[in-house]
Length: 78
Image (cartoon, rainbow, N blue to C red):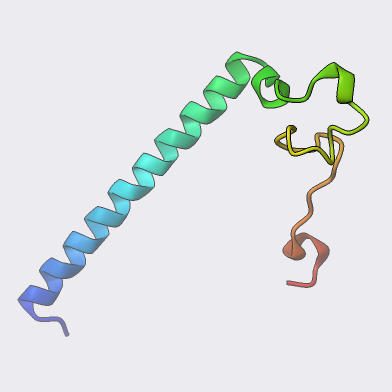
């Protein structure tokens, strides 16, 4: 059983954790909203039309839109 100070500490940690979760959720919603609002054009803005062949390996391109990203859990090894 927990003593009174431990209960208050647990309550404070839970409240802090909940607040952090809420902030991250709001940030994710803003990021999704902005991406949908500009139809994803900003993600590919650094990739110029001139270097489309080098875009996936270039440091100028934030990501390769043609690559399939798979986690170890998705492969069944995790």
